[in-house]
Length: 189
Image 1 (tube, rainbow, N blue to C red):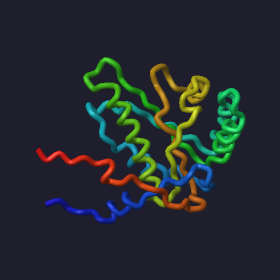
Image 2: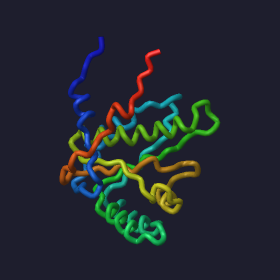
Image 3: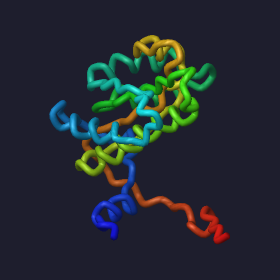
């Protein structure tokens, strides 16, 4: 018989990411962040390849990188650029999940990318379960070669997500959730 963990299921049924713009300092210390990072790396990983790595950006690094965010913003959309720059300037801490898939192995690259995405969600859930506010974001810096260079990404690596973590500000209102009847198909035979 399975051993139910109703408190875990309740957490998963009620979890709510916190918008990055509502996160404030303090961010978790390195000691407080370590178990979050450890939990984040406990994900499905076909072949035990570990096709991902993490880069932790503390407050000063986020502020410094906001200039690169401004530099690589979309041409003709200064409002979008300014919004993203403010997000980075005010970020208490960001964990960059870098997807580093292996070519020429039996595990398809798509499964390796999915494993990196699982790291993103696991980090958010671990941070929320630890009492911090957290959100998984991407936006244009995730796809900018200039930004990749500044982060030290190597050829073939990409950003799976920017996990913003900090003290939660205002609790956002609940949002509509998918209707199981619309999203689940049952096949009996």
